[in-house]
Length: 311
Image 1 (cartoon, rainbow, N blue to C red):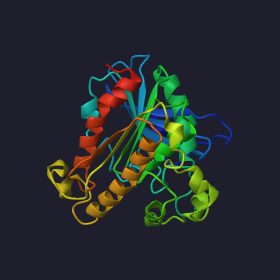
Image 2 (tube, rainbow, N blue to C red; image 1 turned 45 degrees about the vertical axis):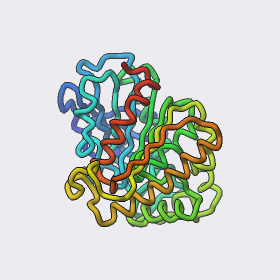
Image 3 (cartoon, rainbow, N blue to C red; image 1 turned 90 degrees about the vertical axis):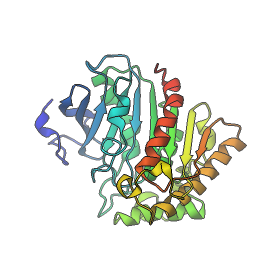
């Protein structure tokens, strides 16, 4: 593997049909790697932070944590802001933090977008990245997935399309759902914020693909998974810490979290109506900050760890 390839946003001269594989690794420290994986579906190299125990022991499960709206390409991530490296120090699990997918809803788009490019993120997270990680880190094949903010709903959607891949899923402060009026507005707003055309994603809102990607509509496919859902109230409070440092601040973050709470409540109620167990944490405070995200992530870990068999 060639470390010089790490950091490049373009794939080397490889045929599009080539298999997904690791093409570069930088060992940042004994428990952190920056891993570059060639994605044949997107015809490019995607970087990923991988947290692992010292010595990279074999036979461990994997926890994939998707980024927010900026795709961690803006430097805002679980790695830099959410306390993941410190929290997972000493834990017997591989944690994979992809860098990419900004404003893409972490899904497969119908057509390339002039601004956001070629997006096949569901294919990447369900097929390409796990195949590369499982081989390189000699995992035991047990996986869990989480999403935050933009990627929270997509994390649930992704699991409905590959239930055999994951034992647990967590959605922190996002808008699960794609077809309700509020969910359509939320999804469209994120893509538009990044300069993309939402019609290039799944067609115009209300098209069949929007229903296929709605985890509320397809909630029955989550049966048997450990499920964690969380959202704050949209009211600032202790969980935020200093919101001007930890995230979106008070202006805008309160509205985003109120929307997240509404969408997440709908998702939780849908699961309850189907008799599917889930943990739903509705905090009395929280305005879409990393203080809130970190608190819910830490709170979700015992459930995820049990599903993965991590002691």
